[in-house]
Image (cartoon, rainbow, N blue to C red):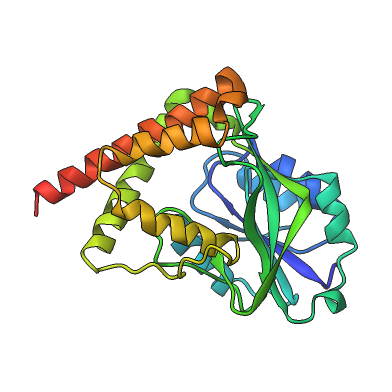
Length: 283
């Protein structure tokens, strides 16, 4: 059994994804811990076939679900890797993990993986979506879930981090081939983000990370997020969409890519702003 790291995976009706992910990490011979939120399909059967440790916990939001997983599973390895069920470890990343030597990472508490995001079979290469670095590997007991977020989930660790630019996580949610599924999911997400942004404006919720243009990828995102909150509602989605399409060359992603940038960068952001206005009108 792998004594260097263990995997945590969140699931909910992921039979279309889970076998794909677990097969991609099988050769690492690592312990797998799965936190499920009430699947009714074959998700748990697939988990059992890979000898995964499974717990069930009702879903509130991603940050709280990750917090539960990190703290309730008895992980004994020095490193934890947290993956989403719709992700795949590429052979290149598998090689980095297979040859991972803790002695080479003294003083490092977290490792960022490079993600490739696919939408309806298309790699979203432009629009600010690649490269995109996610903190997915951290020292057990040091990395934690950022509970000040209501929808977006991120892990935070004290001390130094490093980035693996080579080797990728592939993220492709096959359920999103159905646009109605995508829209329904983002309707829920827009509620969570609208509440989060309003609570930040009211001083009821803080941003954990301080923005730093020269910091790690999450500190850089925190800087842009802080600027985003200062932009006027209803206008900022158009500014963001134009930034993605023009300045970040999203137009080069083709028809499917343009659809993604429109839905995620404009339609969704306009929906969030609409719901923020609705919440404010009730105050």
